[in-house]
Amino acid sequence: MTNRVLHGWSVDVEDWFHILDCPGAPSAADWEHLPARVALGTERMLSLLQAHGLHGTFFVLGWVAERHPELIARIAAAGHEIGSHGHTHQLVSQQGPDAFARDLDASLQALTRATGRDVHAFRAPGFSITPNQHWAFPILASRGITLDASLFLTARAHGGYPLDRQGPFELQLGDGRRIVEVPTVPRRLLGRELAFSGGGYLRLLPDRLLEQSFADAERRGCPAVAYLHPRELDPGQPRMNLPLARRFKYYVGLSSVERKIRMLFTTFRFGTLSQVAADRPLGQPLDVSELGRGREAGR
Picture 1 (cartoon, one colour):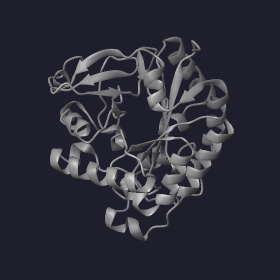
Picture 2 (cartoon, rainbow, N blue to C red):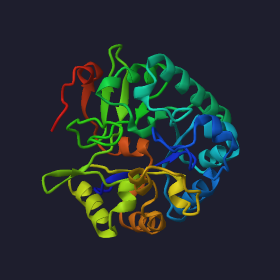
Picture 3 (cartoon, rainbow, N blue to C red):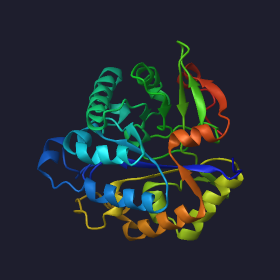
């Protein structure tokens, strides 16, 4: 086994109008009537991965899988890992346990129909499992989820989870079951935490700082988890009438994404999140009940 760190490559498969908790975004009732562009960016991502001989984890909205089952089947057939991104792109904090379970079930059913396979990975929309939503983990385990990638270990728009962890670890549930957590870990730079590995952060950062941040993670033996969306490979997507700050965050740097992906793919090692979790020994297990009491939070 090489000593170089294996970083994670992940894609949240949602369409250009699937934006969270924002005035000016289309309502769920309008989604059916909007032009679908999810296949365009997804196919571009598949081509880039294939060209570099890489595989990633695709967290798919059940809503998308219902309407584009052939696209999801192609992702799976190409050897990529399929995970759930929920069904209707709702923040976990706005659902509660019962609604979360129903939404998760709907997504898993749609993904299983599209791929013919059971699904064992999950990422919450907006990384929205926060210290107040630790109840989500037993629900995930009860549905066969064995890998989660919902914890973003610094403050962000939809919460964040301030754990002092540097890579994948196990979450231990009260009934003895465990879920492997593959968190998104920031870089510590000049006394501040810098999120860098996906979405608007990746689009905004200059190439050199982005490369340095992945290299820093590698030096620390901490796998970075990159995450992107199909819309980020679709500069021609329709523009929504969003508040100024959200408009900047949503559309900044779209023209730079493909170049940055190629740079990362030729400079670092990437794989699925399951491969990342298996590549090195997992960190010390963490009891989910400790999360609920806020322990190990803070740095």
